[in-house]
Image (tube, rainbow, N blue to C red):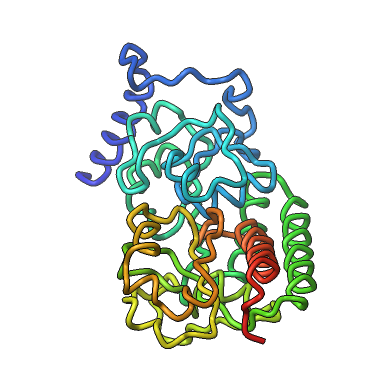
Length: 313
């Protein structure tokens, strides 16, 4: 009885929040296209709380009502672009539950990593958990399954097949372009400081893409659940034949250190090839990120090869 009372109270609390229109700071102005769906089985008011799922949905033409951490997405992911009308819910780990309740969504898409932050809304809207990064299969295979699941639960069947086909075509095109590159191996990194970086390997989306290309990932060391290891400059100094790829944004102090630091500027791979900067791409992304990464990697290696002519054969 006590548990039933708590459930009812929580439901009434959330519904009550939805009616607090007097609190202007919590009441977004909704476009006419976001009127409440009359069919419960075809969700229109979709909230997405995971960046990889948001990227995948947008790539399939599914525009959510709201997303978590829109500014972070625009800085670190960038494409597909987030339309201006999409409402920002705040940080993924600290979403505005009041705003979510007011939005009265038909469906909340999230991953297991963020699910606990949204569990209190389970009485308000169905919550669908979809994982790309897990202990089962690989991120690329999981990303294909995630696209199909998103298409199914949102009533956009057929869009996943288009995205999968497009992604595989982009990777095939990158593979053809890279046959003319003299770069035989790469280190794919996110620079953290002049002495520390993330390097991506097994369990990462980048590794899955590289495995389909005529280049090798020089990093074969251990990685975590997300497919990266945090390493020091000393740990990668031995990889003199690998082109060092730094995914933007690169901290300003790292750029300065390349010019002035005797440690970073003398790193064999940088001394030989330079630091190859890559535009932002979702390092923990989905299918669209896989295709984008293959495009950017092919462009980076062929452009740098033509400019410097120093890649190892």
